[in-house]
Length: 423
Image (tube, rainbow, N blue to C red; front, side, top):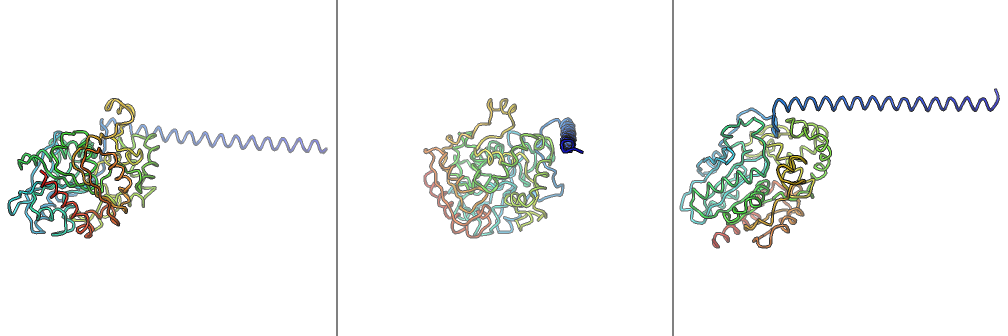
């Protein structure tokens, strides 16, 4: 065979091999496209059927049906030698909130102080350090009328007038509703019962977000607060340890919006299956269950999302990813209908004129100190703002580390006393 024929033969073989490889690639690509399309269609169909069945958006989580104590705060107060009245506050949208009032042993002439808990917590968190050390007890012994409030998410609250606690509609809320509905109702109730013109507010973690939302959206409440002391308040959270998780979820959220809204546990389960240790860290920051927490029942497992709405978590994910303290992002169409704009508006922090105290730490990886300082810069200059940076405390140390009783708590008590004199 001549050299030219050999070359032509080799060339033909190479062309056929390349053609076969291209065909194989095309076939694999076609198969993958078919598989992906089938998966998406099945997912869309199943989610559509689920949506048709439920009819409405859901922010529910598959919840533990076991009974929990609805009176844990009173039990702990009695354990520590105090008595309390358990009262009920009804919100405008029908939630029955539980509030406790410590029974005075003597005349409470110094003023009224309301304590509010963080996410995944109830008012029993304020008893964690026990007698003489917990901030609430120190304030009570200083002669103040002490109240504890519970949000609609709290296991100590008494549900809803019409909605079942396990229903989808019950859990359609974030810190926005906790502020504008729950805290508003509690403040009005306490002022009416005590016949006081103003009260002092002390909040931890999510209570800060909720209070800022209330004062921004309903500015009249600024005049009802003698002082507001916020420990580790989440507002600008883009600097924290979970920013990369929040940004990673964003494209998934854009592609599969139903995985948050139309499936009870689709997105959290899938993400936390892949990033298990990160989810343990994330939800561990929000939860004391299984870690020796007070009155929690100690349910095992790090991925425990009882007593929380997916909308609460999604709202925080949004403000972490966006770097803005903004209202809830429902997506383009709903945003236009609800807010008349897209993206959703920022909270009007320039309307916050109450006296604000910010207490934060350089070691808090959930609410980074840079975010709190950004919040301080955003608040108007007319507000009487005090900010105090503490060294070495983590996010949960603000209510569970004994060292805060000699550093953080004296500053809060001094601020309350100072504003009481000015009233």
